Image (cartoon, rainbow, N blue to C red; front, side):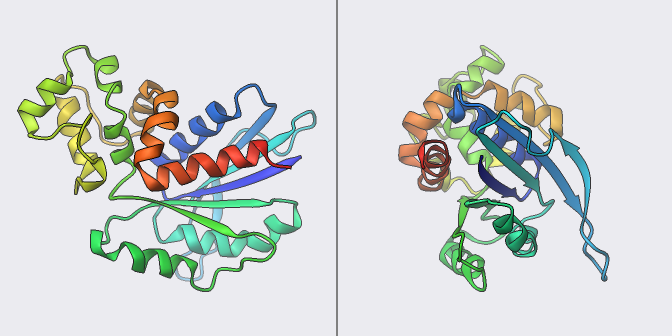
Length: 236
């Protein structure tokens, strides 16, 4: 059984990663386990507080563990804490997904270097996926989903109301993508406060074929994530 572990900074990334894995897996027999972890302050141990899915079931060729770490800085520390256990359990791919925010755009290389510093790389090289500035930039870039949520959320209306074009502009240059998404949705009184149901509604509205074939060629880290998952399913 091939095994992949994905550590995310929060629930938004966890929900998106799970949907992307299942989409890219196609007809493959893939099982997904989702864990949410909290704690770790003042000598309090980290603990799993929420689990969806099962352990490694028989009859599946692929197993994906997705861990919601609860905050951006926990992604690296949780990977380091579980690295040896994952390697010993036969995992061959580990990915961390986090936002660049609250860091500044000009800090992107420093954040990447800081993530790599001190991480083990044998037998598994850990890959960082950095959403600039927030994962919602990827949702903005998949512009066709707006009209699926409400037919009145057209690109022309967004352009007129907010002065940018999700179809043509680089959404990685938006400073507050989550706020942009909230503002656009609010034109039709659709809430987006990043609750589980609201994130699932948005993610379920995304065209993952479009994300893979078009957005992943324009957004470097999204493209890297797609290639990593495709390699997991296609590799030996």
